[in-house]
Length: 205
Image (cartoon, rainbow, N blue to C red; front, side, top):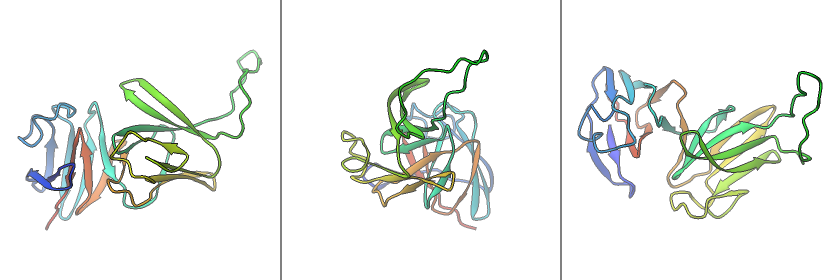
């Protein structure tokens, strides 16, 4: 694993062996100074030139850089630059058990929302999603993060298609990351974000 600094240069490395490799503040000098890493954060299981990353119930999660459009689901957590976001669907309110309808403002067609996560169980701004395609960026698009220099001018896109929701990176400088819900397969030169550190996997037979 090679540490990638914010300016794109390479930092320290952490050797991986075939089989199970624990990752966290307790497992090497490249990790020990990152307070956002749990002591035992994740596990990388290396098999030849592929690997599987498992989140070991860490506080802040494991994120993998997207390489192509991916389907996302309600509750999916994303990371663009320094922005931690949660995607949810908006559904019509169900009547109460006694049949009383729940009152709310007219919905112009919002079908989903993106919520900024400020901290554990603390939400910030919420952006409703309208139409089949919503773009996110620092300067352009329907959802903007003008104060985040790590977000590209036009960074990513959320698309509703055939009853499914997809996330696509739009060639951003720093990439778009999705949180791993349990475990995820990786290949050589995959990028994994844990705590405040970005790593590139170098998997050789």
